[in-house]
Amino acid sequence: MKYYILLTLLFIANYNLAFAQKKERPFRCGFYSRDTIQFNKFYNSTLQYIEIKKGERIASVGAQNGNVEIQLSLFIDSIQFTLQDIDTSCLNEVEIQKVKNYYETLVDKTISNKFDIVVGTETKTNLENNYYDRVLLLNVYHELSDKKPMLEGIYACLKNKGSLVVMEKMGKRKGKKRHDCNHIMPFEPDFLAEMKAANFVLASKTTNAKNSLTFYIFEKS
Image (cartoon, rainbow, N blue to C red):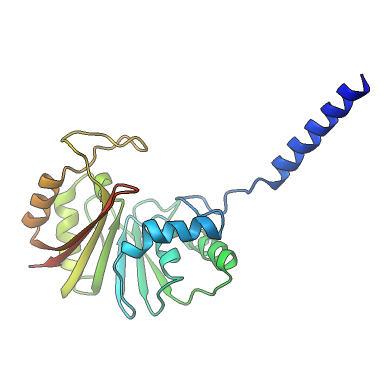
């Protein structure tokens, strides 16, 4: 009987300890790295393939709370980011500051890059014309409900030698749905045709077989 009681007490103690040590979600929206090991894995699998350069003006469309962009900022400084989204429950100063605070504490480094906010719509980016060196569409293209006016807006906001970075998981056939959000995955032949129709020229393509992400760099024609 004493042995059974002891086991029960040990189980309760371990359960309470595990519950107490469980991390609360640091911010409302988006994936987050729980520790430096996961952070470095995310860099190796994703961040290193997102092409940005020091001194650029960059707009990220569908950025939520700037989760990915802030992680990028720990590797490249002197970037002026504009975070654009339609969901102000994610895209707001409080959420962005939470993300910054979390990652600055995680890796013990101060982020110096500037982050502006632009609220868009389903059909308009509301980004300034002829202003950006680069626009990012990171895991966002499949969510665009009206691609034509959005691509037109992105084209207009880029400088003459600006580029568009698209990160996506491509479907192996038309109509294939993603498991995480149930959106239809882009089918590469159709996707490239849509980009060509929007006057973008493919400059490079890199696929990471480990996570099935493909990174496209497009330039204005």
